[in-house]
Image 1: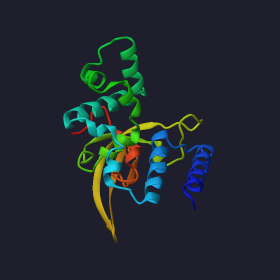
Image 2: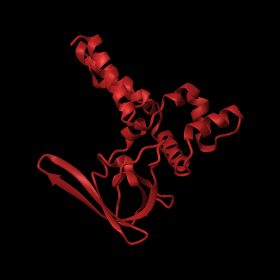
Image 3: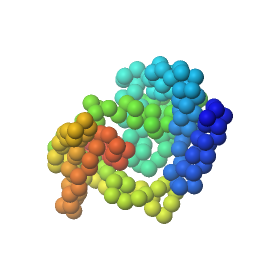
Image 4: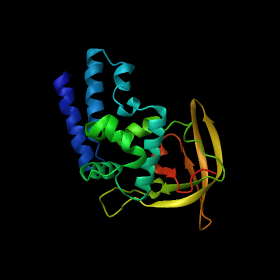
Length: 206
């Protein structure tokens, strides 16, 4: 296939994702198109992929502050970007994240997508232990989609067991949780494929 034919095929795939109510973000589409283009040209390098994440411009302390701010705002079912931009327009101080506006600017904020944070959600900083309080999404056990009648819902629970699983060449972590009503559920791949389906509860780590 020629580069033009591959791009057409990808655009068609994006359209099918939209129709199936599993839309990709603009950032994800850009990465796929760029990766395919560079693969064809033989130039796909790790340096190029590293440049994709604007959060790498932050210091470790700044990243920690912003991540905690985003989590706090999203737990209130609000958009952290909207909050910052509203502060900007109304000339309000944004507190601990004021540095984002002063040092990086509005264009930088607009480049940030959820998957950029996920790249930093390594097993080290997601490490769960027994007694931790987290929230889990009903997307773990049923189909949900934002903007439909099946909206995501979040439920408070406690971690009662964490176990490392070695299955042939695949390593992953399972986490058993207990809900307030006494029901229990096991999350497989809690740091891997299901990392999107849980977040720290307001009371956080023990």
